[in-house]
Image (tube, rainbow over all chains, first blue to last red; front, side, top):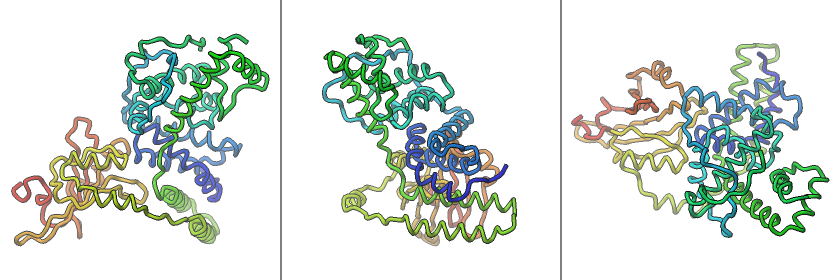
Length: 181
Length: 250
């Protein structure tokens, strides 16, 4: 193994991406200390593997991918994933209230933590906005259709829990028809 | 375009990251201009996405994280080079160090503390039970189970402390006042989580009891079945009894 990344290149990566990586890590783990650990581990691995980054424009997706792998590695090691079933979740609800309620940070994180990682990751990346569906599919090594389908269910879960006045009633209520994904 | 196709394309029409080609985007725009139902649905979708997106991205980044990252990366590089000595290493390291210090000086902006924050601190009550300490750490966005049998009435401070240079770890400081023949004693308790550390190996390395020149160190696992936490306690004085619930009697 060698250490090909110049210090300057790695520092530049830190400057440009550390905040976004930390936020992603926080949303994945729900813990500030775990998020910081993961961010550190990501940059340490990036420093070792910098020669694998051929296209500088892909640096962000590359770093996010390293971080997700590090996270999955930890989760598997500690067997700490516990989550709800999404069987009850369909597509997006028919109507949302006109005045959307404030989303409490703790409630948002609790709701995210309920999601299995394969649903949580696409929805976080989706709301971070910079990632196209193709990017998300590449990161997760999945067909784009699968990503879209998981995303739709994860979004429905978040909306039912966070934006609806009475989630139980609306979860059973009318839904928009499936788009066939 | 019919409404079903429009619904499908709407999934791809993201403001921040457009996924449609120009032709599809224009066809969708035209449909939305003509179909009130779809236009209302698209607007509601966008509003909900923006609302959730704002909340999702609202994660405060800890102070000093950038510098801790740079420090660790520099340390990792140094460690790597120690194992792979090369000609000119000293000069290269000096140049990197100068560059790094210059970088820090150049980019550092000094923050100001707000009046509101100071007022909050002034109004804050000190936690006195394990449960209250857990709640206090939750405010720091850390979920921990503090040692249950400590006398938290002796609590002086709690914070996230740097452990082994770059790992932020929940830390509790207790101070037992002098009493009778006993001098004032302090105890630092570090709470290590199994999600972040190999606790079994740490326990083997640290040992259950170590008598150092300044502190005695004791470590023990949390009571839960999973042994989720390892408590490492550095204390002064003859024993940890003054810091335990029940005090010297235990």
